[in-house]
Amino acid sequence: KLPTYILPLFPAISLLAGVLWSDLWTAPKPRLQKVLFYSLLPFGVALPGALVLLLWMPPKDMGAEYGLSLSLVAPVLVLAILSIWLSLFLIRARRWKASFWSIAAMVVAVFFILNLQIVPAVNPYRSTQRLARELDRRLMPGEDLVFFRVMRSSALFYTDRKGTVLMTYPQVAAFLDSPKRVFGLMRKGLLEEQPRLKDQVHILDQEGNRVIVSNKK
Image 1 (tube, rainbow, N blue to C red):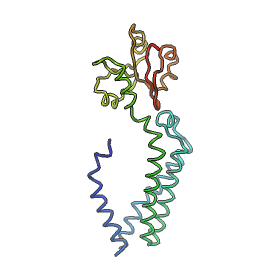
Image 2: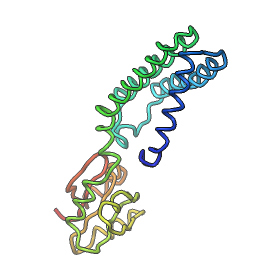
Image 3: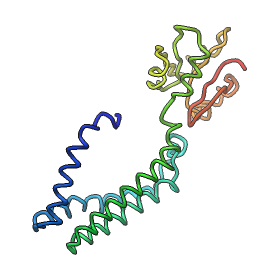
Image 4: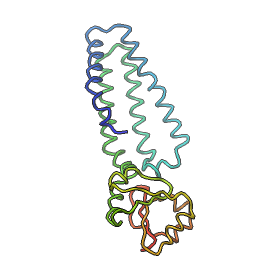
């Protein structure tokens, strides 16, 4: 679930990868060439298939639910595909150093694209940290966080509160009919799915595809 969970693996993996490339550079054996070639080949086949599928049938909720667009995802896939096939060609030609640097360049390029473009676009859709703390500021001590349809466990983590999930429209309507001011967290798309809610809720804050709503302005 978190990168830190597998962090201890990386020193060992790095050493093994270093040994592999060292052997290829100093005393390449046909078996090593096959191992490297056929370990990369599935990526060279799967990634073009993924790109074709993405362009042919783009997910309808990719932007609304994850903050992604084809203009962000497709270039990364194209870069990875070109780099992998270049590496496969260089491996077949026994140009080990060139193959290594083509893979290294791809990893660095993809890393920078992910961190500079994709991660900033996705983060507001993944974490409820800011909205959860805003809700926590508005609620009375000990009061539950109220979610419509989907509970956001990260919101509970950032506020140390319990959560209540309202699954049906009558439950939501009864909650909003409260004489006191109440607050809830919902997907923005739910307002489109349930037009009746638009007349009952007031949006106080939003980030990504989630909104804080109240029954009063």
